[in-house]
Length: 359
Ligand SMILES: Cc1cc2nc3c(=O)[nH]c(=O)nc-3n(C[C@H](O)[C@H](O)[C@H](O)COP(=O)(O)OP(=O)(O)OC[C@H]3O[C@@H](n4cnc5c(N)ncnc54)[C@H](O)[C@@H]3O)c2cc1C
Image (cartoon, rainbow, N blue to C red; front, side):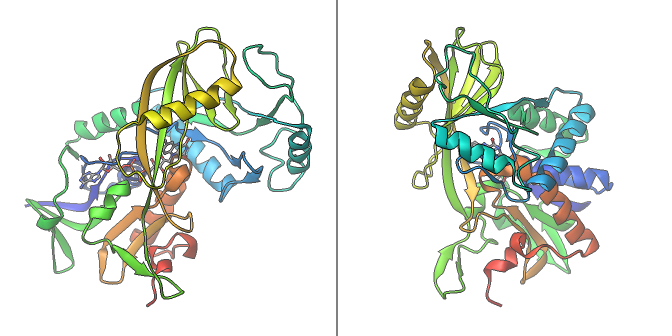
């Protein structure tokens, strides 16, 4: 039997951010990673403090942005890879009214540090933006493919990564310990994204405050197309009805879609069509679709993650429900979770998995 402090299941951003806490605190752990519904590697990896549809700050914007920027910059140095890129984001205005709304928003206390209070003129003739742009501050982009692949290699070096699907049936609990194959661990952390829906230790349905049964984790499928356009010559991220994100070498990630019905991870023609139609309203130069990706965002009804333990077992821990902004929020949330499970610090109610239960 190999003795461990933790077994981690799932190596998306939730798994990576909790592994960083475990490593920092010299804990012994292994990670199982192989499964469906991957989200992190598909994500555009944007760090963006503002909901650009309505000009409102995202949940816990300052805390999440500061912690995540530092986290990814530090991880870049640790893994010696160019993970984080400071990249400006421009919001295309559709009307004079939107320009005015932007100016009003940029004067508010909670937004003034994120919205540049100026209307920028469009100087790229390949972009349709007669009303100009607003510039968002503190934005950046993570190379999520590089993140996942490099982190796997990092764990492999210390023999911490097991490229296998975790078989829930083989988990046993005895004397406050977790037994799995030839491992004995103090705790297990489930961070398997939307695949948690198949985890028998995770409640399928809960009874809400109105005595109605509802699902705790909900799928939200997102698709991007990758387009090539030598003429576009864009070096900032653009946002209107979709994001256009420069990837280098004349390639751009364009999306994403939101679909709450389709749980499959395959790419669809419908999403491609929708994105191409929208893109043609924003740029007026030729482009070619060269790739397409799809993933499932693990979302929750109240748009807050769920962290922590259920009543039945204190050493089975969940870290999930990261939703549409997990790249941004995961580093802060992993700190909260670690302090909770190791140092008994209370979790804020809005992220505690128990908030959903009637006890
Ligand atoms: C199209 C799209 C765009 C997005 N854009 C952004 C963005 O710009 N900014 C932002 O902040 N967020 C964004 N998000 C949201 C963000 O990607 C998610 O919140 C986040 O990636 C969720 O991470 P996770 O670790 O919970 O899940 P995942 O990334 O899905 O990772 C779960 C891992 O667990 C593994 N697994 C599952 N079951 C098992 C098992 N039984 N055994 C072993 N391993 C298992 C899976 O293989 C996977 O590797 C986007 C998401 C999508 C889909």
